[in-house]
Amino acid sequence: MNSALHPAVQEPDAARIRGEQRSQRLVTAFVASGLVFMLLPGTFLGVWNLLDISAGHRPEMVPQAWLQAHGQAQIFGWVGSFILGIGFYSLTKMKSTKAFPVRAGWTAWSLWTAGVLLRWIGGVTGDGWRVLLPVSAVLELAGFLAFYVSVRRHRPASSGTKDNAWLLLVGCATLAFLVVLAVNGWMLFEQAVRGNSAALPHVVDQQFVVLAVWGVLVPTIWGFNARWLPVFLGLRAPNQRSLYAAYALSIAGVMVTFTRFLPVAEALFLLAAILAIDALHVWERSVNPPKVLNVHRMFPSFVRLAYAWLLVSCLLAMMAARWDVSGGIWGASRHALTVGFVALMVFAIGQRVLPAFCGMHVLFSTRLMGWSLYLLFAGCLLRVLAEPLAYENVWAPAWRILPVSAVIELAAVSLFALNLGVTILRPAGVRG
Image (cartoon, rainbow, N blue to C red):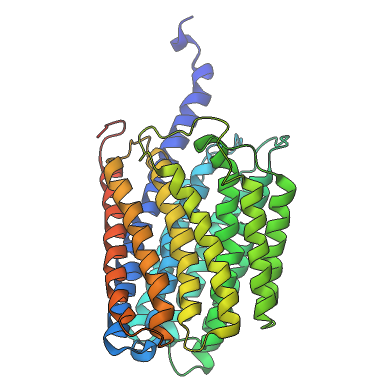
């Protein structure tokens, strides 16, 4: 049959291809900006902060506004940008009858990127922070709303599948993200009106970090792991009831955190982590061969190691709730969670899926992927071991280990950014 005589037959395919190309360009923009925030405002500033702290042997050597700007760049600028990019890409896979929202996508990217950048500038420079902080919050919220409305409008035509635990978790985490941004806006407006610096009060900031990490990042990772790990690692399908229970416990832990019953909150987080590991079958033997084509052969092992860091973080947090004096155990727990679990998972899964999302590329170098994973793990291990010993004045030489851990992690982040950057700049399908 001559396809030229039947253009109507080919039109749906052509529209689908155009939508795919537009989504690939958009996710590439989100990934590129996320890499910039990860490397410069995020990791580089974090390394600078840690070098100053180590030189003075005092955590208060660095302004709190700098530390908070670093954290915002990592959570919102890096991981948040990746989440939004993947979310827009998924719209083309939903079999919706609507066209891909090009204008909404680029509007969301512009507002989100500008908001994160202004938040970082206001926190680091201290210039005009009473204006920059609330404006940044408005821009971030507006950018996310543009994303959220697009996702709501592009629901699948039918979702009659029993394997929908990942959809529910990611959907709930998306709603939680909206709540986080609303809380962020309220805090920054309050600080701009009544505060005396760009730094939020310490307790308020720590509660906000728990809300963002355990309310959004951790459940999002669990959700995508429920979808991808049976494919990539050959694991059994997740136990949906246990995964729902893990999510419920994590939300309960977040709520208890705001009542300041920290030992109870940390116990809930530990139970949630144990249930999630069991539900996802992370540490069980694979029932099918893992898919390691075009990625480093140790990719499955690092995914499993990330969950070890999640447990370490929870155990350290329980210790900190009872014994921490100078913030060292709390800091080690937070680093094990944000770097050991979140960042290691992003390094492993991200280099597996993002090249395809950005235009059907093949990862530039599996060797660079391996080095980035090994270095990130080593740097995190040194940091988590040394920080309690140094901050709590247990072992003075630990202060000299902290800068080493920071440099190793900076090297890991640089290799990750280089590998993904070269990958998305090369023509699609090129290997090696």
